[in-house]
Image (cartoon, rainbow, N blue to C red; front, side, top):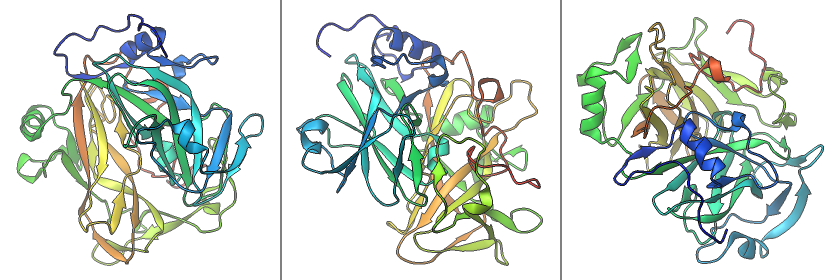
Length: 386
């Protein structure tokens, strides 16, 4: 990674925001994000992020770690238990065991540019816990401004034993500069003129908007006519092939979750749930969003493992679509936990784009979850009545 950086997208002094798809292409052409021997395909470029692909080998490690003042490779050698080849048929990753995988992509960022990573939505919906590690760092998923070096992905399947393969994308990289985050006043003012949250097809009234370093979302626990509100992962399910889109029978992996009288559910400790937000989210082209966990009980509840929402999520320039509901990954810790309909469980933060992207989230680019009414990810065949 030594040497001068090649010219990439123009990062004007004082610019604030997230790099859009067209600038990400320029960053890739300049080598700021580099696939080495494997060209980064245009299909890896999303409206506000780049997919990160698995390398050729996975290391089973005895514990998760951060490198601190060392490189990941130097520290890794103390914790390797086994080495798995991800080429050809791939390798099986067992539940509740940490694996560390070098990613194909590396970065060489200019001093004004930093990065943040997040699991892809389909990864989070499978309860596969992932986070990126960089050299000389004490933080997960944060890539320091000016960082030049490799990227490593920690992978821990929690509910299902999975098979992964070389070049599979489980995570995404977002690049940003300056002060991108909208504050509470920005959000309230914007929602008043360009609504970001809807309920029942109507904009959530400003007086009902819960704003605190982001917009809070609640759960839809009224459900369908049968009282189904989502899905709970089954224990001891079959092997799940992560390259198998639409290939798996959901009944092998999931059981339905029904609400109780009063539109509530009781979460079983350490079981994984897929539920839908009560509100619908609209991310306009000039913004990107990220879901963050909201912890109302100091650790008893974890929500939303996959956080990036691209420009265009829930957006339709023609107008009929007024937001899309968010699929929320939920797990209670330690004790059974009651959640009522509409109870806030997570928070959506919004960031400025440097400029709107040249492609938006939606069916036109193969996005899987626009207008979703079902929480299951793309790996599962859709139930005929949903």
